[in-house]
Length: 301
Image 1 (cartoon, rainbow, N blue to C red):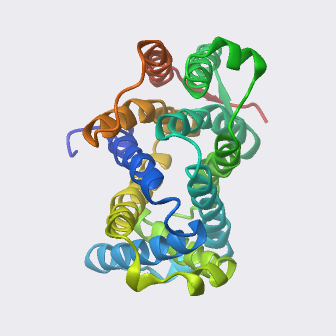
Image 2 (cartoon, one colour):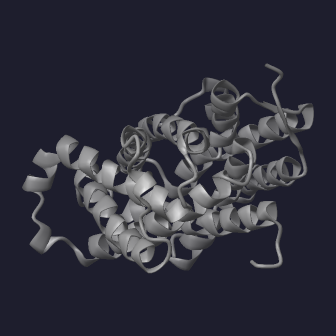
């Protein structure tokens, strides 16, 4: 990535982010009913923290200044812990593609959070792109069923996961607001350790009740994937990109997630959506292109 501008490197990081995150929807739906979400994610954060700690020790180290104001890490860790717990709760009943469509609503939520926290103002073009993306997401969520759309019948899993996405959207601008110059890998490590502490306390009963020695193999496969690929790697990518791109543009890459999930579902032999649902997917891709071409202004203060 040496020849790319800082913004270009941020875009490349988010492209990798969207591909890796998509796998957690397909694998997550396969393990969501095999283990309590709090227990799974406590283990996930612990494993991811160990991976990132090893990376930090081999690269930047942990500067003494990174330990300033540790409450910052607990704010970020709490937001992401809430996101992941609600994600796996939602995946107990929500289909992977539908959950991924809910995830694409986060750019709108992130743009709102960016305005409140960082005074980032979206242009009219960006607002139009967000509207197109949201419409496409809703089209997928309702599975191209116009009657269901008019009745606004949303599954319980999608509702639970939506609130997780709210936490995720707030997390994005909070990274930029709370970062004090720490390298992305170090900042990620602090968030992971704090999130692990929060999840361990919150889910202690579930952790104790889990028969770790007799879990199905798919749970361990899913746990390793979400810990290394969809946690350690994506956390660093998200932190890296957030420090180089506006919040709305960072989260714009979530519009690619349903497309990646369809690839995962096809590879796992779970079939492909109908042609009408693919219309909604196409709308989210159009929204991504529009968002990436749109500037973001700073609000006058």
